[in-house]
Length: 339
Image (tube, rainbow, N blue to C red; front, side):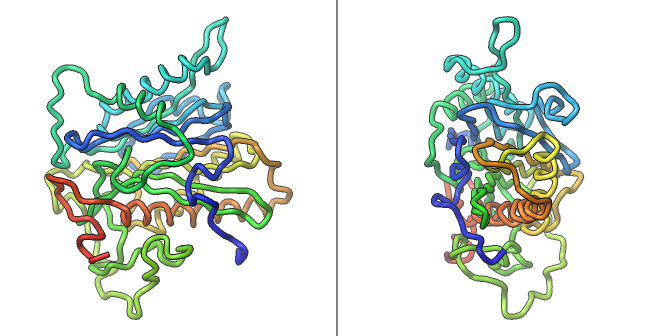
């Protein structure tokens, strides 16, 4: 593991065949992130939170027919945000993309949502929620460069005592395979150790990507204290961390599922507590197949470990990169701890 390094962008776009687009509305304090596959990618999903909101996740089970997807969508808006996938699907159809069925093309677009309805934004839309249009916009903006922090699906996210956000990170395995994570962090729990500025994910940090603070000289005495977001705001279900773990390796659906399972360990190494009844924590996995599969069983085990550490880094970067906006309920990490 000593030869690990971040990819050129330190982002999901380091995985060949994937681009990312964001769309958000500052007044709404919510948004959408679209992950577009340049060609269909093998996909899987694993849910560990107690309150998920999803679209098209059943088809990702290894025993079901469709093995590849055209895009994945992460959205704010709770159940209203599921409309975002329709906007991404519409954009893909215009591009001539989709699963061919009897001469018709059906873009395959799984999605997941987080709850940001009571974060200080104006949710008084008239009839239809804006997420379908935000989804279309996010898809049309997809590229190798995108903003993190208060952006896309993370634009209205919060954690215990702080703003959350959108984060990403990548790792290049010594054999050349890239593993990358993208995550919208809106957790019940906290990404920092007790009342300190130190991130739980500190042991995995590469090149000061979230401040370079490392671990504290003395572990804070209140690190085991359970700090829950809903004790600081009105609503116990205003949560959920949703993510994508991706690789350019060739994997089948079962192996992709295992990668998603292991990426949840990254949640546990970066957030305390996690996978609660009031989180809908979920990880999609994507494998673009641009490289050969891992040569040995040990190589795949190492990819699973990398999936966990990379996800932890992405979570910390999401919170570290958040920026303040009018009407915020919580301070950003930068504001609270002075950068």
